[in-house]
Image (cartoon, rainbow, N blue to C red):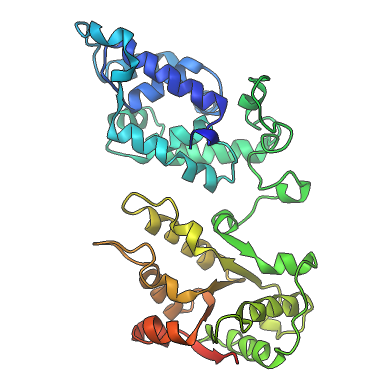
Length: 371
């Protein structure tokens, strides 16, 4: 994870250690991370504080008195190894990559760290910032405004602060807010979460990166018929491994681009969801549900998206732990209400083992046999 931190964030972490030692504390908490951001004095987090007219000196004084200095604790002053992260600080640092991913940023910068601190509403540092009218939503909206108003100005000044750093400054750091440096991608996406955890097959079809699908006209026609319905409009492709189930989804995307489908499907996007990346890194309770809910919200707001889930049997139990929901239980209500459209693909054995046993999930799909 350290590799994803921008040089400025690494400086902030180093400063937070020094601030903890200066105050005679044996731990590094979110208050020390905040003092590190303020001590650095530059970066996007400071830009946001200035934009919402926060008095930085007043903030520094109030943060310092959250935990009064332990004057007698002089033994720690020369021993940084004794310092340990508090649970809140550790969680804030570990979840910064999620915030960076939501903003499609290659590097973790100071705003992502600030947002992660503000996520914990019970943290004393967060409560202090809230009293100063700085909360998660305010910072997030201000950051979005900065990105929209002047993308070039806020392209992570940390990248130019360390000329000796051995990194691809010309490639990854030039534009942290779009997936690539292609000017076409500078247009703000309506589905940033899906763009991160999925792959748009219709875009690949437009770019002529898909092979033509031959001999599956009957199955593709059947899938397009099911998708054109008002209800019960979620096809499930069932066939042996390697028979070409994913190719049918690609064939549908090609037909949509070529306008060889019913008018209902014009301008639809077929997006394949990568469930593995959705589950990856979700160590804390609720993280998977939070990602899943973000995906669901985007699907509900954008009715032109058809979700394709290969190996759909894996959603049964995906992300599930004691006392939490799995992916299938989160999908079922939205599928039943017709708020999202989904194409599934699985083998006959897996269908019998997982989906057929779950009657509620089975009812949501219309079977299409692929021989």
